[in-house]
View 1: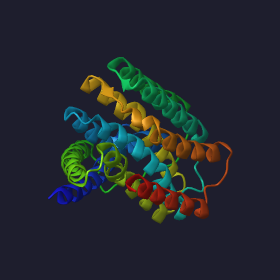
View 2: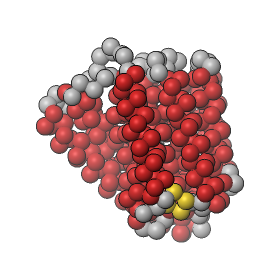
View 3: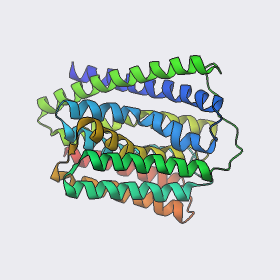
Length: 306
């Protein structure tokens, strides 16, 4: 039953992520939001909602390791698995304008999480500061945006009322999926004697990264270079500043297990830093690099369990 709950949770999270992103794209188009911000903001926020749902559910249930581990693991999965897959499909060869700025912002958010890990917690004030930084950067990106690329098409009717309803339905799917995933993952951890931190870094992280992976595969099939890169950078920044920040504010703070300082925060910084360095140096993330990234992620998962 626990494994069934995990599978159902995965399906609901992925379906909800797709639905809410499509609805949000239509709403953004109707409100004339600059297209450059769609991948980094609207799509990134939409595909990061599973992490928010999981984090709030975990903290409310007294399982902060699942929340923190889920965010760290999701960021590693986004870089190694999602962006690696995009590179293998040839969808990350042309990141586009603004990617250097976004790569720097992602690393600053990653170092903020490093500081939180060594502090041992994220209190409400720290969480509120993270949210302010995120909103401030979105505003800065909006002012700096100057892109004439057309909006992506969506299967959602081009009516803001219908798009709003669709977005709400997608949000409901995400919340139920998170509830099932947490319940199933916790049961599996208990039955197999695996720590909740490892479950968060692996099962939960992979499940909440499925919407990003779905967007990446679609981008690869359509040959839309740069879509996956913007989505990954935006999602990683959203996961840290938005997800953990909002969870800390709503949940009254998050305690962080000191074990994360021994390995997992460094894995997250290493993987994010390697990709940021390539983007800042204008190095192409080719198919061979993508294959190595995916292989590295598989090795990391095996290492966690062994």
